[in-house]
Amino acid sequence: MPTVTNAFARAMAQAGGMTLTDDGELISGGTVVRRLPKPADGKLSETDYFDLLDWIRCQQEDEMALLAAYAKLIRADDIGVLGLAMKTAPTLRASLERLERYWQVVTDTAIYRLETSQDPALLIFEARTGHHPVLDFRNEGAFAGLARNMRLFVEGELILDYVTFRHACRSDPEQYQAHFGCPVRFEAEQNVIALRKEMLDLPNRLGDAAVSDFLTTHLETEIGTLQDETSVRAGLLRLLTPALSNGVPQAADVAREMGMSERTLYRRLADEGLTFRDVLTEAQSSLAQELLKDSRSSIAEIAFLTGFSEQSTFSRAFKRWVGQAPAQFRQQFPSP
Image 1 (tube, helix red, strand yellow):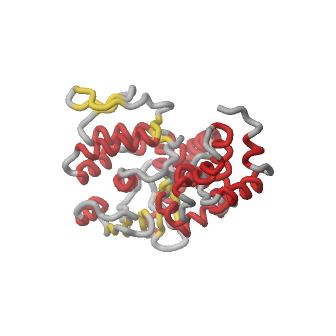
Image 2: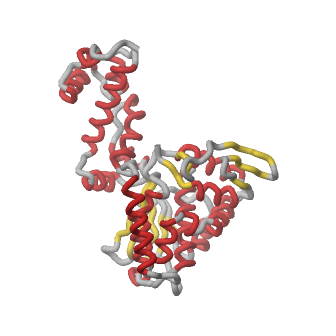
């Protein structure tokens, strides 16, 4: 299950004038107003985190004030070794390369990608989770906090070229521009922080290559222990499986749910040696086998639940997948 470091939740609670305890109690005015499961290894599930974020957001009269307060409160140090590795990297470019490589130790609900083949360079933020009403606000908070922290740890004046978000503007556009100190555009193809390449060469105030390399070695060990839940395949499976009962989703619609363009989805899958059809087939096959083993649904019903309009088409596909007809496969397992 995707997770998010609890540091983000604590900072957002504080930005909203509340306190989130280590036991998961959200306290406002001395009263417990909400309870979350106790964080495991310092992380919350994506559902608990997004629901909390949405609840806090809905309690505020001024979302932009909440966003600005969060950006001031969240610090690179709050994300542990990764934050320290970014601050001690020699240059901003090296900091962002560490962000891109190791972000999954903080959360597997999104990734950063740094593209430097053009000028300005693009730092792209891509969701790796299903739709949630608070995601637009989450994306704004991620960029607001990162932009402020970059300005804090680099030497010299950091100038952003522009910022774009995929969603529509939810407040006064001039407030966003004032906060980021650059033009901010909405309903764009990607969530992007753009900055001239010369900005990437700015040194960091605490830059120390030896220290940063030591921390990076630690991060390499940590990232090696993580399960590959941040892959596009894993995120796509999470979205496809529950959607199949409404028919096979279009790639463009799924890509939009994942916070990327259809073209980007295809490219990211190709990087993993996969196609959309490969992952769709995996989702259908896995779900069909689970239902045949563990449910009383008829084969016709299972065909429908896995995205097929005809039982005969499903049966032929299932035999191609596992080498047995659905009824023959089901006979191997006792009735539930």
